[in-house]
Every structure is written in C-alpha cells, then in structure tokens.
Amino acid sequence: RGAPFNDADSNVYIYTGAGSLLKFDMTGRPLWEWRTTDEESAFASLPMLYEGSVYVISTGVSPHQGYAFAVSMESGVPKFRAEMPLNYWSTLDCWSIFVHAGIMVVPSGAENRDLNTRVLGLDASNGDLVWEYDLDQGVWNFMPSALDDDSIVFSGSCGRAWRLNITTGQNIWSAGPSGLYCSTGGGALGPNGIFYAVASYQDQWFKAKPFPDIADCSFVDYCPDGPGLLVAYRASDGAVLLKRRFMYEGNQYPAVGMIGSRLTVVVSMGRNPELIDRWYEQWLWMLDWVSSTTFHNITDWLFAAQWRSPALRWLLGIPVKQGRTVAFDAATLDQLWFVDDEPSTVYGAKGEHEQLFRRRARARADPRYKLGGECDPDSWGIPVIA
Image (tube, rainbow, N blue to C red; front, side):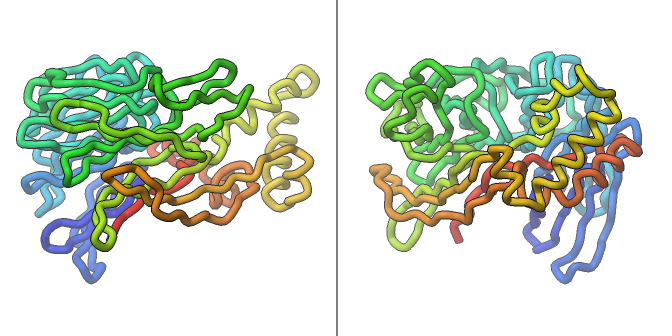
C-alpha cells in the first residue's frame, strides 16, 4: 500500500497491508521482521521514522478500534502499543502518519470509514491523545508538511488548506474553497514558504466556482478551463497568492523543487481508474431477475472478459482515460512543459484485473488481507524531482 522508505544508514523498510513490517540493509539482506497479531489486524497507515522508531497504525478488527505502535528501528520490537482513542475511525484511503515535535499526527473518520474529517494529535512517547481537531473538508491520503518547529500545513480534497499548531491542535489559519469531498488531491510545501494545493473542483449539475475570479465547472456545460485546481498559499498566514485551473482532474499531491535553475511545481493529473466495487454496483438491477450466485457468475465473467477484449470495453461504454504530468513555474503558475501518459481503456487500474479474484479470496480467508482485496490506486503516484 505504499513505497519503501530509508533511514540515514540506507537501510530499507517495507510494510505490507496485511500487517508485516520488514527491515533490510542496503544490499537487501533481511535484518528483522515484525508482524501484528490477529486482533491488531492490518496496517491502516503509511509508517514514519522518528527518533529511532517506526510509527505505524493498525486497523484492529473493527473500524472503531485501531492500535498505535512505535517499533524500534534497531531491533524490530515494539516500544509501545496503544489503543486508539474512542473517537478514532479508520478509513480506507492510504494516509500517512506524521511525527514531529513529539506529537504523532493521525487523520480519522468521523463515525464512518469513507473520509477523514478529523485530525488527532497523539503523544509520540506513549500514544495518548493530546488534542483533536475537526475539519470542514475531507482530507485524502493525508500527508502534511512541517512548516516550522511547532506547526504543520496540509490541504483537503477540494483545495482548502490549514495550518495547525502541532503541540496543541490550534487552528492558526485555514483558507480556500469549501466542500466536503472533491478529489484525491493534496498539497506540498515549497522551499519558498509557499504551500501548493492540488484538487479537482467541479459539480455534476451546478456550476462549481472555487474562487469568485476563477472559472466555474460542471458536467452540464463542461469546464472551459478544466476541472483541475492549483492554489498557492503563503504558508505563514494563509494568503492566497496564486490560483489557476488546468484541463485534467487533480487527483494527486504535487512535488515542489528545482528543475535546472527554476523552482517548479510538478503536478501529475488525470481521471482516477474506476473503483472495482462500482463495476458490480452498475449491474445490481440483475438481482431482480437472477439469483445472487448467478449474478456474481455473470458479473465476474464480464469483468474478466472486458479486460481481455477492447471491443467489449467499447460496447460497454468504458471511457478512455489518459493523464498528464505538467511542470508549472512556482512563482507564476505558468505552464512550462507537459508529458502525456499512455491512454487506458480498461475499467480499473492496470494490474487490478489479473489478480483480483485471487486477492479477494485471500481477503475472505484471512482478515489481515482485507485491505488488499483490491487496490483502487489514483491515476498517478506522487511525482519525484531528482
């Protein structure tokens, strides 16, 4: 569910959604492995290294449970295991723990598993709850940035941004478009003190306008400047410095860094692959005519067949999806260059179809694999400037 990560000695840490955390040296030699218990279940978060520990959250056997761990980087033995607070709800996106100034920052759903709309601050020494903050917009794949020694900045799925005091949870500022859920986008802090937020901002029927002086967007009259949104906030006080639309959906966090002599914001954009569950939802009308077993046999066969047949995908009206990676000037948000990816006509993400039924069977047999039944990734990974 996430990329490997390295420590200062070039050791590599890998975690699996099923609850395994492994450490290798730089040659690939295994150093240790730690695994959660059946009660602790699968991992809910991407881990983070902090002062000699790997911090990670597991889901527990119910969404209202969950456990926080600090695992020794040296030995692979947990330093503590703490039950998550009673107001914690585990969601199904791929969010990150953030540990800074002795506080472990964790997103949470609010009595549902669909969207993170709450942020919790836990004591990094024992997992105790220190503060909580309720958001007025959901955050997806939560990954904040440290602005200074005592505050973090992050953005929501509609492009709104916040700066919180990490030790108290106090809102220093929040600014930007309203809305509960718009995209799987997020933001990144640049070395120039500007926070760049990426999102989509559109509506099914009504014109959606994130700012008064920017183009609106709806599926009825299309979007003249595109559904994507890029906003530059001054991180110190939340002032909106720059904003613009772009022609593709904004569903991923940006990268900010130097390309040559120019500070650049790189955004990978495009429509996300369809969720596999929606494939089955569109055929639910068949249950009025056939048994549940027949329904699953037919829809499973169609799912496997469309993956192999471009003609069948065309007949079923599965749209062509193509994304783009764009570099913007960090000072002006002017477009510098772009690269298009290869178009895709399959229903879900590439690789989702071949092993779907085997993974689902494994998830039914072992609750640890419940997060691995299907992947449902975003249209791109987060760009890296190197």
